[in-house]
Amino acid sequence: MSDELKDKHGTTGHEWDGIEELNTPLPRWWLWTFYATIVWGVIYTIAYPAWPLISQATPGFLGFSTRAQVEQDINAVAESNAAINEQLATADLTAITSDPQLNQYAVSSGGAVFRTWCAQCHGSGAAGAKGYPNLLDDDWLWGGDMEAIHYTITHGIRNEEDPEARYSEMPAFGRDELLDDTQIDQVVNYVMSLSGEARTPSRVEAGAQVFADNCAACHGENATGDRDQGAPDLTDAIWLYGGDHESLTETVVNARFGVMPSWSGRLTQAQIRAVSAYVHQLGGGE
Image 1 (cartoon, rainbow, N blue to C red):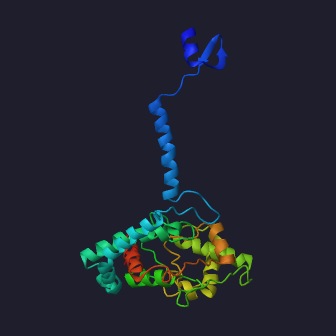
Image 2 (cartoon, rainbow, N blue to C red; image 1 turned 120 degrees about the vertical axis):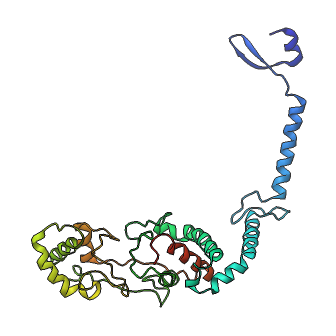
Image 3 (cartoon, helix red, strand yellow; image 1 turned 135 degrees about the vertical axis):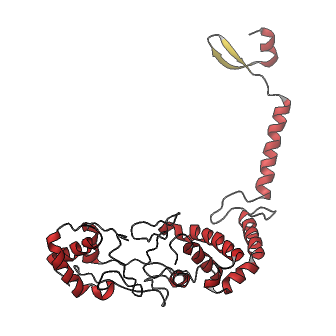
């Protein structure tokens, strides 16, 4: 390092292997740009929401709010769709599919409603999960036409918030000692034989009698179910909680009591009809 540079800029006092670090000043343009960013940052924190407080952030003297902006956008969309939403809310349910424009809107907006409110249980693709029905097939506990789907969504199933919710309750045959362990195993093997192969075929015949005495009143003499009671068809190999021996035994012993909320207080009538149309057209609608 030349003595001329050292005399001109001085050093920082750092030295590595005889190499000293010059105390060279920053370029003026860079320094002024840096100062400008500091000024800009201070002005920004005064003008816009910035500093966190106990329950909220400083609002900023411009009063800008991203939430308010989103709300304005939502209101603008709602206003533009007001007419067709009114049409959807008042149209006869069976007439929605016959109006191409209305049906297209219903399915599109219903898909958005489904992904927002229903996908958490039924899955983003509506294929369901254990304890949550698959909405893509044609197996329906309470009916799969537009009116039935609309009623189910509106009032829900076995919830305590809506007195018109669909309701049925399977007895806990084991927990409440309505059947003994042998009878439970017999009827489980009988039910398995209806759509597949029993684990213990020798118990099927006795299980058929247990079924006739205790289960046929809801599931029907042929075990094909009863939609008025939400009793599933036991012959189609479609299982909500599983069709293996362990799962069926758990069902018979402790029963199942799935709950679906009522959506009448959460969604508008147009939204309920839209998601009804969306579910109906997924593939299993009747």
